[in-house]
Length: 294
Image 1: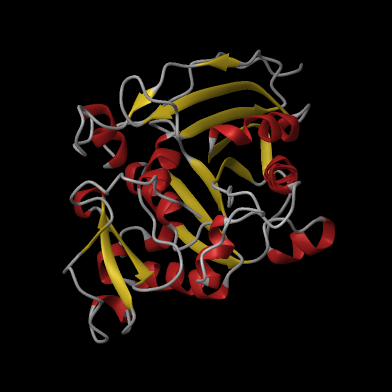
Image 2: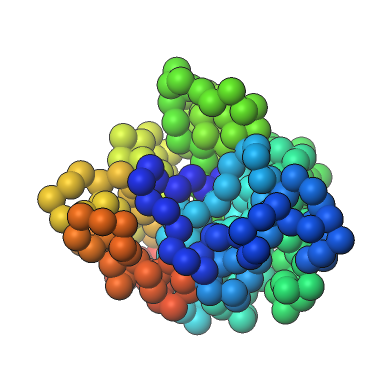
């Protein structure tokens, strides 16, 4: 599930409540009291999210979606989709792409279904579906859940990347979205990504910089052509996120890319680049030429 950096409010039109209040029980495709209907990509799609509990999507989801290149087509899997922000952002920008939103928490999977039922998302609903399942399922259990081998062209994931020992929120739904349950979380999620991706398919991850070692270890021999992009709040500050992309089966070398700058100046105004990435007007495509085995 996605998690916005501290001190980085969403851009207007990118993750704000459509009416500034909890959703009307009789409005917006079946949203009920206790939820909000939030607009993304300047009104290109909407998301049903818990008003006072659980995780609420923001900048992380939009950056993750931006790693899917312009012109991408085929099938995308959003692992740990939450209410579906990243997957819906990707197919909102890319009309040739379909998405499967995979989420374990029943409450968040229900939000994703409600999001697809919104009248405002009628143009996206035929290209998206929800699977309620644990991303870490293996073998026959994974297949039975609907996650077939070599089925997807793109996989995007934003695992809960707070360390399990970190102080947890008292909100159990939010805690599940934010805190790792085990030290091998990236191994388990990337094992699934490798299984369901087609050869030559792209995986994208957004995480904290301190997770880089675990991510590289989990990518292992499954993926190559790893590209790492630091995401920094302002010039001169340390990265608070990394975007990682890689290709299944590629033999290309790893590369470290120039940073994405979130804010311009000392305030909370987004940089023009971040504004475009966050509102679906631009992508963050890979630069590495893939070298797949013959």
